[in-house]
Image (cartoon, rainbow, N blue to C red; front, side, top):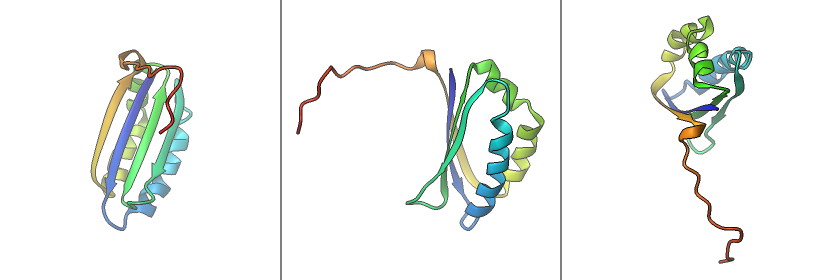
Length: 107
């Protein structure tokens, strides 16, 4: 599995415009081959922050998403709303698992 986690900071007052456009983009992206999950969460404590979470079956499936027409069209469309965006790609095999035990003591 290939995960992408993004944190997007929007220009003040651009939240509704971004969310409207991103909803359409999200629905199209969910139809991409290999897309398991594609979601966003708008911050309640900071109206100008949005978190984007994507999951694809493989890194290649995500790369194919990056080569779609809707991805290419999204760049210029979203650029007007963004201050900055940071994305982290995480391969499931790269994730280190930490086990804390079968029971946790109560505080």
